[in-house]
Amino acid sequence: MNHQEVKVRLFTTTHIPLSQPLPLDSTKLTLSLFDVPWIGSRPIQRLLLFQPTDHLPSFSSLIQSLKSSLSITLQRFFILAGKLVHEEQTGDVVINCSSSVVLGVAFVEAEADGDIIKLIEEKEHDVDAFCQLVPDLNTSKLPAPLFFVQVTELKSGGMAIGFSIHHAVADGRSVWNFIHAWTAACKGGELADSGRQPNFDRRVIKGPWSDEVTRGLIRRVTPNLPVHGIRPQDETYLCILADCRSRLDPPIDDRYFGNCVQDFAAKCTAINLLHIDGLLHTTIAVQKAIKDSLEEALKGSEDWLDRLFKLPPERITNIATSPRFKVYDTDFGWGKPSRLELVSMSRDGAVVLVGAKDGNGVQVSVCLDWSCFDAFESCFFSF
Image 1 (tube, rainbow, N blue to C red):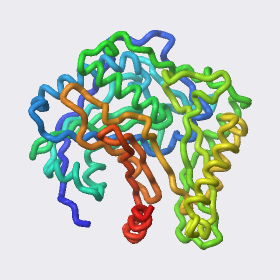
Image 2 (tube, rainbow, N blue to C red):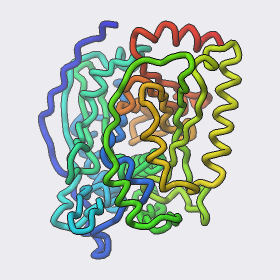
Image 3 (spheres, one colour):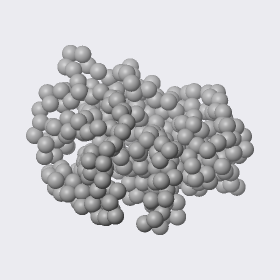
Image 4 (cartoon, helix red, strand yellow):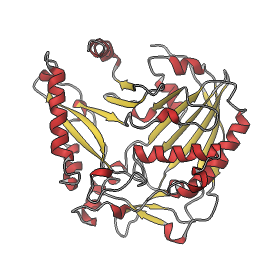
C-alpha cells in the first residue's frame, strides 16, 4: 500500500534533569534474571497520536507542561535517567544512577509534514512514519541510555508523543505505571507528589540461582538470525509474556519497577494449525503451556533463556503487551490519545494487544509480510 510521505525534522534536544538530587544509596542497581534477556533487545517504543481539538494547547505550552511534569516524575522513577553499563571487574551489567552519569533524560522536539488523521484512521500501519515519530534509542552497545522522549508537531495540526525505554529496566506494567504517574503530574494530580513509590529492589525476586548463573546469561545474550520456510510437520510456537509478580513466592505487588515477566511458548505443528479444528488445537496447546510453565513461575528459570534460543525464529509468533493495560486512559490534560501503537513490535510475526479506545474491546495490531496478509485477513474474519 502507498502511504503518504511523512518527513520529520528534529530541531531541539534538551536534557530533563531530576527535580531534586538523588539519595546517596541510589547510585547503582543490579539486574535480575528477568532483566538480563532484554539487554540487547530493541527498546519498548510507544507512540501516542493526538488529533487537533479545542482542548489541545499550543505546542510551546504543551512542551513546557511535559518537560516540567517529566522532571517531577523522574524524581520517583530516577533509574530512567541513568545508564546501563558493563562492569569489567565482575562481568555484571548494572543500572548506573551516579551523579556523573545522570545528566537527565533526552527530550527531542520535532516537526513533521503529513496528515495526522490519515495516520490515525488508516487500517494499514504507516510503519515508516511511526518509526520517525519515536526516538531512536541505541541498545546495541553499552553504556546505553534508558529513556528518550520525542514530541512532534504536525503541520496539518495535532501532535505525537513518542518514547523509547530500554527493555532491560522495565516491562509493560512498569512502563504504564511510569506513564500514568507522568500524566498525573502533568495534570497536577495527587500522584505527582504523593503517589505510591515504585520499588526498584531486584532482591525481592528470589530464585534458586546464583549471581554466576545471571552472569552466564549475560554472556549468552545475542541476537537470533532469521531463517525462512515452514513445512507441514514443523512445530510452530506462540510466545506470550506472562506477568509473574503475583506468581512469585512471596508475591510482589505492581509497584515493582523492572522486568518480572516470563516468556512461555505454546507449540503446535503447522498441519494441525491448518486443520479444520486448528483453533481447538491452538487452545489446547496454550492451556498446556500455561500449566507447564506458569504454575511454578521460577521453576527452571535458569534454563528458560536457553530454551527460547533453541526455538527457530521463523516459526515464532510473539504476542506483546496486554488488554489489561488501559492505554487509552493516558491523559496529560488535553484528552486521551486518538491512536496508540507499540512501534517496536513492527516485525514479521508480531501481535500487539491493548485495551480498545472505547474501553469495551481489544485493539489488535498484527505485523506480517504483505504476501501473507490477504490470507491472514480472510482467515481471521472467518471466525
